[in-house]
Amino acid sequence: MPPDAWRHFRGVRAASALGRGSAKSLAVTYLSLLVLIPLAALVTNAFNKGLGSFWHAVTQQESLDALRLTLLCSFIASAVNAVAGLATAWVLVRDRFPGQAILNAIIDLPFALPTVVAGVIFYTLYGPLSPFHVNITGTWIGVTVAIMFVTLPFTVRSVQPVLESFTFSAESAAATLGASPARVFRTITLPALMPAILTGTGLAFARAIGEYGSVVFISNNLPYRSEVASSYIYSLAVSDQTNSAASVAVALLIIALALLIFFNVTAQRLARHRA
Amino acid sequence: MTRSTLTLRTLVIGYVGLLVGLPLVFVFQQAFIHGLGAFWTAMRDQGMDHAIFLTALVALVAVPLNVIFGVGASLWIVRHPSRFTRVLDTIIDVPLAISPIIVGLVLELVYAQGGWFGSTLAKLGWQIMFSFPGIVMASIFVSLPLVSRQVIPLLRELGDHQEKTASTLGAGPIRIFFTITLRSITWATAYGVSLTLARVIGEYGAVLIVSGNIALVTQTLTLDIGANFDNFNTYQGFVGAVLLALTSIVLLLILGVARHRERKRNEYLA
Image 1 (tube, each protein chain N blue to C red):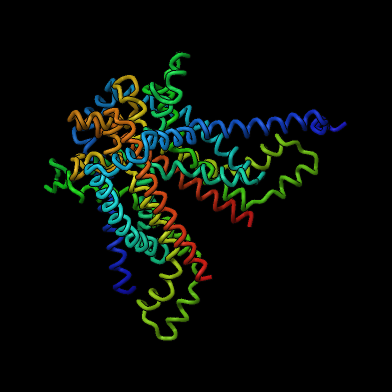
Image 2 (image 1 turned 135 degrees about the vertical axis):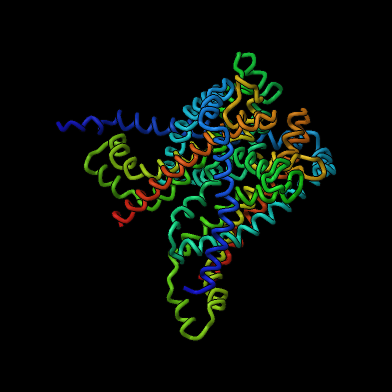
């Protein structure tokens, strides 16, 4: 009898199926206890005093100002990084120069660096004790700069692989036919990169909307002026206004999901249109 | 070389340098501004040492749990697809779209006193919020999809013909997992583990809410840095910040190696 023969007995098969079954239920329990039940509790807490109370919490002036500031700063930062990210990916793929590997490595730093570290650095660089005598604490500019830092890698890393696998043939054909480099870029390269740019920008936007650690120090959290949505939710949560906190949180989640879906659907439609 | 290439290169280096390079240099300069001796004294600050210990302990529990879950869920989603796994595939990515503050809030709504399970757990004598288990749960939540997002695409690409072959040759499921599946996803998993570790060590907002931020008890390293800044212990804060920055640089290097190995493996397979 071969040494592995015991594995073929029916009992072992059944045990392995049982093992797989219990592993699956463990995974579902893990996900439920950590993610699904807590999210259900959030929605319940937001609406358990009725739709009116939800709406009242979301439309408080402080809430509206926080949501508006969050969306505005996130929009500016992701738009800037859409352009800068495209340029960076371009330089990383099409250009060759010494130190390029360092540039490539440093792009990922905002992913790996804890947000609070970024927060305290930006507060010190551009705060009241700034070595450059630039104080942007408590302003939308400060919030935007912090968000620009954390969202930098998204567009770069979504455009870079597409650009790497891009074949030059269409571009060289257009150039041979007399198109200027700018026109080649506008009519051939950019449309091919557009889905990747949109996907990256969507991810950056979703990340920006929920950002806390990197923003909280430089923003000074002045209500109506420089308080972002996550910071407002935090202040509600710690002052035991749980229902209001849950309501604003649900509003913020809906906005983030809607934006993600919008960007993804647009990117897919563009990709399909090209194909 | 054209002038426009040079201009673009300069602009990109300038932008990334100002946005990422300058802050990185600045944090090291601030931490070593008083010399190595002062840095060493600050390193032995009681609050910070406890915070480092707690962060390490949280990572030690949260990271393995998420790796087991991530690999297991990936195998389930790719190898045993059903209508159920399609839903699972979507849900798994949800934590990435949720603000850390909301993560802290939702856990509090369930596990704090007055939350859904809070009073039952309190009767059993289990305290989850404002203590170690809560911090672990928040860390797991925010880093949940980081392993599976690396492993799922790779498993899809590899297909299962090697596993099927091994099975016809008489290998059992356990042997197949360890000799074939696990070996082919090692580097993708390593990549996911580094991302998970970076996220767990660096989490701030979610942990801020669930831990209660109590110095010497539930303060992780990120919270300790934040508290030092709030209390104008700026230098101490920068020493902690440099430790975290160094950790993330090491993790980035590991990520670079993992990605390189992964690519080499794929070239070999192709």
